[in-house]
Length: 130
Image 1 (cartoon, rainbow, N blue to C red):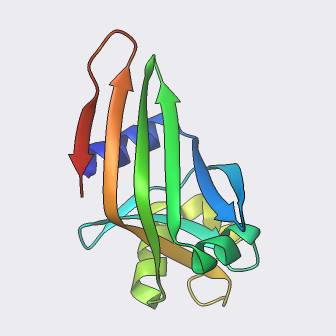
Image 2: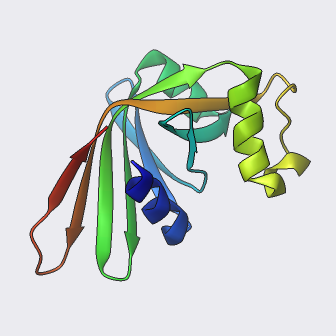
């Protein structure tokens, strides 16, 4: 999981896919943080991403850097504790001009039953579960 998080951070931008009804939705994201041995991402409750994940927690992430990529599939589960939101925002202080752990909007999710597949051109893929 630590390797997955580092890859996402080094890539800078990753793409999160959710489902809205029968329509996939993909958008760029940038937060990846380990808290209490779980991989977390952050969004806002007012965003469609939040509503989509609460309706269907199945999601995938894909990030690419230097000819290699990782795909992460699993469920994103909301953690509504202030400590989890604060930990994320402390790791990404640049977000504090838009978010606060007590604002009623900041939302964090962690991966459950996740499978990460590391791939690169000309190399065999490696699968990690967490």
